[in-house]
Image 1 (tube, rainbow, N blue to C red):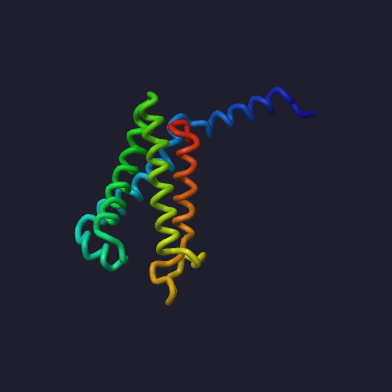
Image 2: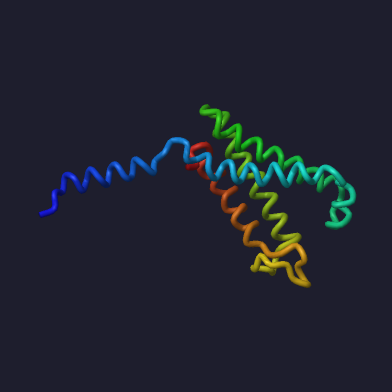
Amino acid sequence: MIDMASTTSFSDDRSAFFDLPAAHWLPRLAVAGVFLYHGVTKFPGLAETAAFMGMPVFVWALVAIGEVAAGLGLLFGGAVTTRAGDLATRVSGAVIAVIMVGAIWLVHWGQWSNIPSETHPMGGMEFQTLLLALGLYYVARGRHAA
């Protein structure tokens, strides 16, 4: 005979194990790291890369600043437990979403594979659509994204 009390207890303990308060840091650190890295690495050779991408330097600089700001905002939003942290997370998510829509539209559209091809030397848009979805998730959930 199955003891229902012990089964329920096991289930409760198991869900508590996976409900770690710091779990929100896993995707937050990953996304922040991606945006900080890509933003910071745009600054050296800003004009040359903008010309290669066919974009005005001003726009490319805004993208770089936006990526760094979004990465820092996600970290700030995770560390600060007030409304400011929630707002920073939501605004960072919105910045991420805008940047990813631009990247998908201008560079990656039409190439669903991540493998570079003759028509899409920068590869596909699988990664960019994932980052777009995460940005929208942070807009919707704010600091409570976990």
